[in-house]
Length: 430
Image (cartoon, rainbow, N blue to C red; front, side, top):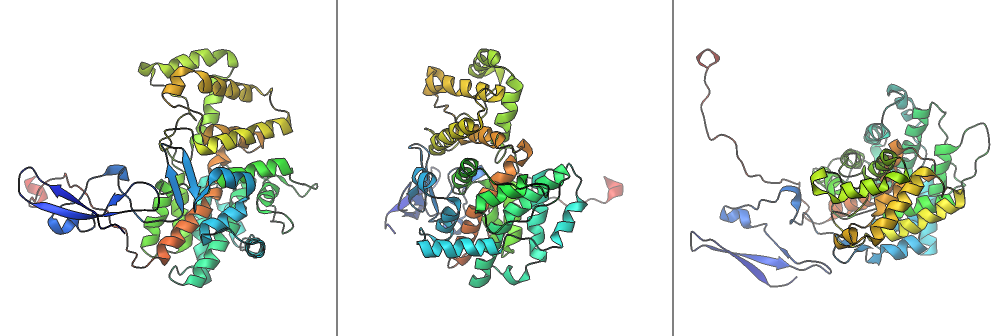
């Protein structure tokens, strides 16, 4: 670490506080404020906009340059050449696997895809119209009631087993939540199929006839999983880390992450894109919609354009755009009204000076919603698939935190703005 320091001085005193400056391998340096409390001060940073909550070697983002790396590998290379199981291994283990390591990893995940039979009965306790995310939060949390041999986060062997179980069973839980919504029988995982193909099978197969996943559509979904597998210290990942810092079991921690992801400001963006396209309704209304988007007084904004983190092009968007066209070509859906609206919006956003100057490029959510709809996946399942993908990152982040030396329970401070001390008054005197 660097020996550089930062000094804090105060306008109303001669006090000076000296704090160490830490350097990462990439990105901004950080001021280590852990000893600031010894001087009677804390920092105030709602939303953790300028606070590094941890040290991590998993994911790196440079929003200005439009970069996203998993363990140092650019997301573009992984999405083009890798698959989700290999990426999950990379996130969890830190290195790309050899052929033998990957085969063993895939075989172990495949071994854990079935749910405990009693868990199937839990679904009947939900309404048929229950949101899949409500079901997933409950079912993933319920895993801790069944898998006691992998619930101790401080046992390395149990951590590994829990990681495999979560990677393997979350797709089954998600697919079964859809089947329950549809009133269809559950389809059990097939060991002959790959990870993504298995999910599509459990989603769309029925006992009535044979089902073989389309390889182009399976590859498209696999890319969606890769692109959403991790994204640094976002709200849901931070939730997993905070829950895990208390020593909570891994299933409870991932359930907490799913609950956080469910928020519309986090995991619901691609669902919002589809709703916007449906509201537009016809290509003829696009000019009106673009005008509203440019009018600050309207309060209207286009969903799926721009990104809080990426101030340049979202590096995942170009990959998802290519995937979107591959899927539309395969299914012959270019004439679908919603897709025509989306493609026209994309054309305008990539050419119009207003959008270019404000860097309002189509982001990954704009394209992923279109792809998922083309695959026949209902919008209510979009966030569930996001959770399926992000489980790989959550597990890796949780594993990294719990296994780190000297890890501590999360305990944010606050700026208190309530009443000062006051004495209790009996009710008859109030």
